Structures are given as structure tokens and as C-alpha cells.
Length: 352
Image (cartoon, rainbow, N blue to C red; front, side, top):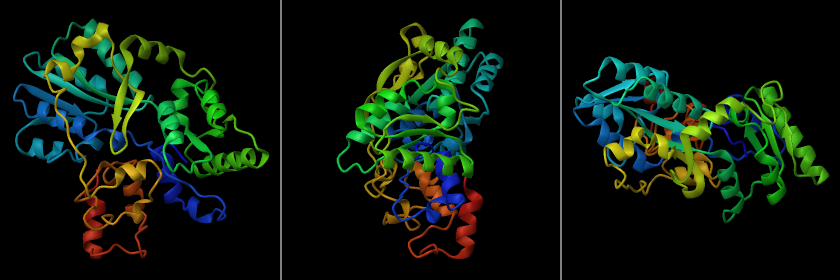
């Protein structure tokens, strides 16, 4: 299983899974941060973004992600002040220039994006900005790997770990996971040769009966990682049980703002914690994220669910597995069912 959605897109785009021998199967994991953000977090974001006093800031890949009935694009079209930013510090700058408005940044992602969000809070506090807050939905990789290995019907025999996450957190968290579950974990990059080397290293371990951490991305990743970034994360965030879209709650698999920074918590500031939601009964994204189902094995794929009419985030995220299959033409029979070439082209053009 490759853990990162960027790795998934590289694998599908370059046809790596199609050139491997039949004995080696790649299963796509829950490594897309947009995809695993739960529906209730999207619904909470929508509730906040609709408020007239709020400027709601987000990266662009979240605007098309469906909540229970809406998405941020529709809120923006209805008059909500929803803005795409390229850094959480952009949102801090907006808060500084609009002291009469509440500015909220949607802080999602794995350990890779968390340090910048933590620094945004520290900068806002240092500047005395009381109109800035984060809606936090950060998730962590090691607890997800443990949950996958303990899930019923698990078939994963080796992991390709995400190089960019390990560039921040290092590799020190992974040897206990490998030893506990008897599963090789190989840290890789994102280029085709990186991934092929990672697959080779995993197979060598399996054939030798070993289950160890192997760093195949040493040009970027060290054992200890970025310790300065980790110190900021420890200061600003604290562990929390986190819900993963389509998967459920995984204990201690996320972060929330620590007690000393809780004044910047948008969930508490706008009293949206009690908003809960259910998945679409048609959407099988949870099974895709757990590696139990390939996108083109889902009955809704390319039919009810397309980039233009997505049922779940895996179809609209730039790192989503379903989007990777759709854009590569990996349909049931090799062509999009019930869709003309013009409609298919329109879906490609319309994807964020």
C-alpha cells in the first residue's frame, strides 16, 4: 500500500501498477488529506463560512469537496466571503487588514502541512490578532497504518511511506509499527524511479522474511526529521481522537489546538462542534481509502460520481484516488460509461 495520494497519482499516471508482475499488487491508501477530512468538518466549515461577519479562507482543493448538501463553492456563489489562499499566513494577513471581520482558516492535512498552520497561530498571537482562528482537522499517519493493519480483511503486506511527511516527522515513529505488525515500511519519494525502488525494497524484505523500516528517500528524510518543526507542533497542538472520512474514528490519530492556544479554535469560537453528518450511501470512498476497493470497482464511479458531480472527496481532490483513475481513463471497460467525450473533457477542465 502506498500511503500518499501524490504517490498514487504518480503510480497511475505512469502505469506502474500495470507493469508489475501479477504477484505484486498495489493497494491505494488513505494518504489524501482532503479525502480523509470528515463530512462533519466540511459541514462545520460551511456553517462558519455562511456567517456574514466571517472571511473564510482555504486552499483551493477544498472548495469542491461535498459536505452533506453543499460545498464551499456554493456558499461563495450565494454570497459568502470564501477566499482561496496559498498559505495560512495569507489568512493572517487578511485578519490584520480586516480587524472588523472574523477570519477563519481551514487547517487540514497530515503532518506535512501542520507546521505552517501552527506558525500561523503563533504569528497571530504575537501580533495580537483576536479575529483569527483555525478550523482544525489534522490527521497523523502512524495511527492510520496501525488501524489498517488491525482492520478486518486487511491484505496489506508492506507499506510505501510518504517521503514529505517523513521529511517533517522523521522515520523514528515507524520501526515499532513495522515490528509490531511484521510489515515492511519503505519511505519513498514520488518520482517513478523512487516508487519502483521502494517496491523493490519492500519485495526484497518480504522474500527475506524481514519487516523493517527502510529509508529509500535519504536525500530528503532523516531519522529525526525537522526537530524545529516538531517542537512547534508539540507547543501548538495536542493529540486527539479524529474521525476519518469513510473510515471512522481512529484513536489519537489527529491534532487539535492545545489548551494554551484554544482561543484560536474556530470550532469553539463559533460553537459548531455539535454539527454531525453521515456519508452518502452511494459513496464507497471509505472502502477505497482503506484499500478494500479500487475506484473502478465502485458502481457509482464514472456514473453518479464524476469530478463534476462528486459523491466524495476522492473524486475531486488533486490527490484523490478516484480522480487519478478518472483522469487516467481507468473505467470499467476502458471508456467512461454514460459520458460523451465532450462531457468527459468538461469534467477534466472543471476539476480543481
